[in-house]
Length: 64
Image 1 (cartoon, helix red, strand yellow):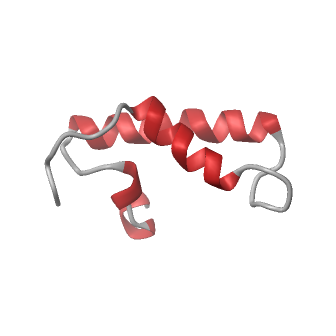
Image 2 (image 1 turned 180 degrees about the vertical axis):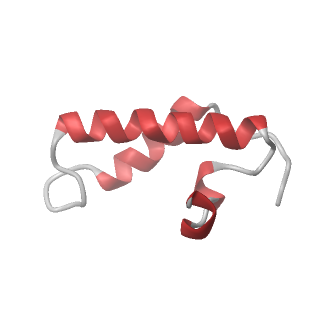
């Protein structure tokens, strides 16, 4: 996997949540969005620490 420079975990998580949030989208609750965003930040920090790529490159198999 690529080992380049990636955006901060906060920015990556916010970007993903922005796409998933809103009326008619996967997540409508503000509280749920906040919890998911925190989990995504944690995941992103892990990916960065072990040089596994960015959040958007993460596959469902890798997430398990």
